[in-house]
Image (tube, rainbow, N blue to C red; front, side, top):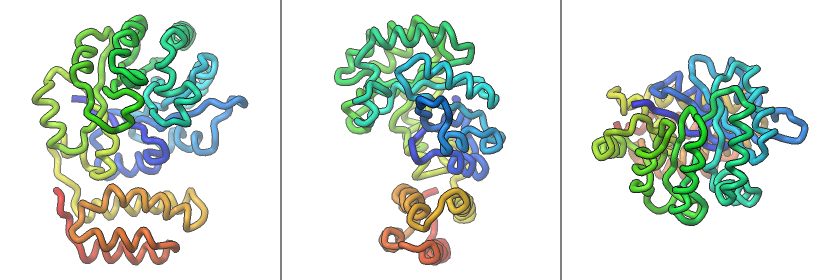
Length: 313
């Protein structure tokens, strides 16, 4: 089974990916949160740091592009190839309203004819391997039958399917019936993405669907950064590993960001997912939420690791 780390905007940037890889590993591919091509044709400071080879050492990293303009995709793909990337991913899955209203991400699925023309031009002119991450459609899962016909016209590196429609966001149950139909009918290799949060989720999924050869997970890794290692039969994270993981993240954000508020925003976001692995975590979460200075935050974290144990292995 191949395991991929999903691209989560604002979360799984290079600092997070590097910390997961260095401390726990287990992933075959690490996907970079989407790049938005701009009119100037340049990468933003954040995007450039995310794709620099020295920030992705030892990882098979795949940048993702968010656009509905073929010329923007092609130009950006070639710029990425100059950094050594051999595979690019097209985002057709982001359900965010700010993205969808501009006809990008999952919003592009509402115009299948334009999407088909986009893919034709991209695959005709772009010599780099292309994978696609998609949802089933905008409103109705039945939309995916036509979308799959379009996808089957093109030779993709793989088709990563999150079997929800845009209006589901991350609610409701993934439509496994349609996913399995896609697996059987797709002319391209297929990867499953959706609701693999724990080892138990993974085991249950693979027992029911043993023919699936590739799984992508994202939110599960936020709560358990050792998830991929555990899926492969390795040990869960111990307190020392989690402390090292935390310290790598924190040090990285302190280097790259300015101002206690900005740094603490990133760390508070992490603890909304990670805190439940500790015993008696709720009182620490309250303190972390109230912290306004890094010095105060550091003392809280020292107390947490000194006084509490890992409750989830």
